[in-house]
Structure formats: structure tokens, C-alpha cells
Length: 67
Length: 339
Image (cartoon, rainbow over the protein chains, first blue to last red):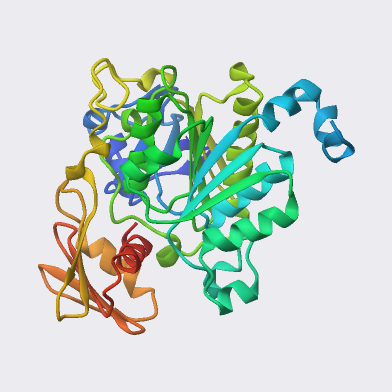
């Protein structure tokens, strides 16, 4: 499955079914992030319900603390 | 207006009128590390009227790779960053009034510094300070600009009280135990990119061109060639305790402050962060393993020994810093390794 993530087309295993699993795939599941799927920002609680589909445009912004 | 700012005033969105506004403004920068020095130098060169710099730390050799205002001499002499920054900034532009404070600022200390402040810039290295700034911003209606960076990654967002969502609206929880510049490293271009975002947003606010201010959360990874922005304007929450209909400013409360206590006779300081759940010790241990030092772990805690300090982190985020009785130094070490 191909997804455009943060502006880049990436191939993601078909086993990744939901946004929650996508975050797990990128090891971001324990991080504080904002996720936008096809221009809609997803609530944290709904990430495990939202399916990812081929061609989805995903933006992931991770909050970091350094400075 | 003199020749000094001629190239900036030729830029039509600023112009002579904008330059006069910049000259009348007072900016407070919390933190004088990489982001703080970058922002401070840019704003002082741009000709702001007054700058207040607050920092609790001193200059170390590991700062010189990216913290532009400091010299080898400052690191050798362990000069407090706020002092060294003021010295250099005064050489850069003697027309700017620079006030510097060597302190680990609490909400009440910050409140005393906020008189006449038009804008706050985040150059801190931890979310305790950022959540405090966020609440101060709402309580006193002062805009602030979040900025952070680690590795080759950076993020920035501008908060206008009464208009944009605040940082508390955007976060479902306060990030803890993530990557820090001391565990994942940091390259200077990532700093400069965040500084560029923060400085240009500052300029828009200082010249009062509000419509130009970005409503987007921006992030980028310069090494991975990624650049992302999300329009977060719909994330403002009426129920937000910082900026909602009935604000309580929770992060200005004593219960939300990081507590420290010197443990008598043990050459140790205990640090207790605001309680908000269990930490992922595996992840923290993984990050520490890449450091110079020894990491030991059991199901309840991590022990990390580096140089002449031993840091023990418990699952609830509480830590014992052995080898110091200096509470500010202990907090600095805590934020350095645990964010």
C-alpha cells in the first residue's frame, strides 16, 4: 500500500490497517503527535478506528522538547 | 531611521513604519540555548527596543557547535548563559536594552518580568516550562511562539491568545521522556530552521501585521527532506483549561510545578515532576544506552551513571540525582536526559 506521508510517497505493509497501526509501524505510538488524514485532523481516541487506504495523504507532526 | 536597518525597511511589509514599531517592542525569550541565542541575535540585529533573556544554565563546550552567541572563553569560564548572551548582544547592537536573568523561572518570577512584554519566545528544553508559558500567555494576553528541535527535526507554532488554539488545546497529554538533544543529538541547521520560523513570526507580530501570522503547526526533518504543515485552527477547545471559556491556568498552580528537594547527607537531589501517569522505562533506557555512561535497569527503575553523577529514574517520573546538592543543576540534568 502506498501512502503519501509528510509529502513523500512511502510503501507500507498491507498488515497496517488503521492509523493507530501506522503510528506503531513508525514507532510513534508512544509519542505525542497530531495526525491529519486527507486534510482531516484525527482525535487521539479515534486513531485505532480510522482505516488507512492506498493513496491516503497523511501528515504526522510529533511534538518534541529540545531547544 | 538610520542606515543600519535600511535593507529591512526596504522590505515593504515592514517599511519605516514597521521599523518604528519594532523599535517600540519588548520581547522576552525564555531559555538562552540554541533557539534562544538564535532568536535573540536575530531580534537584536532587527532593532527591537528591549529584550529580556532568562536562563538557568551556564555555557559548556557541547553548546558551542550550535549556540551562536558563545565563545570558547565562555565555556572555559562556565559563564552563565544569560550573562554571556547579554555581553555579546550588547556588542551586536548597543541601542537595544538587554535585561538578563540567571534564574530557573517559576510562574511568580515570570509574572514579575512580564510587565510591558509584547511577545514571548519559547527557547526552553522542556514541556514544564512551555506549559507555564502557555498559561502565562493566556492569563496576560501575550502572544508566544513555540519552537523545539532535536536531531534533524524541528517544529514551531504561533499562539495568539483569544484567537488561535493554545498549546494545551493541541496536546492530548504533556510529552514526557521523549528524545532530547542530549540523547538523540542535534544538528545546527535544524536549530536555525526553527529560529527562522520563530523570528519571522516574531517580526509579523512586532509590526502588527496579524493576518500574516501563520495559523499552521509546521514541522520538518531536514535530513529526511520532509516538510509538513497542519492547519490546526479548528483544534481550539472551549473546554480548554488554559484558553477555554472558564480558564483555570492549571500550569501556574503549585501542584503542576516540578518539585525538587535536597536529600540531606546524601549529596543528592530528588526531582518530582507533575504527576501524569507511568513512564515507558524501556524507551528511556534505549535512548540512554546510546550515551556515554552506564545504564542499569530493573522493572521499577533505571539507573544511569555518567561522569560523576548517578541518575535514578522511577516509573512515575520521579528521579534521584546523586552527586549534587544543587537543585537547578539537578533539574537541568533531568530535562537534559528525560525531556
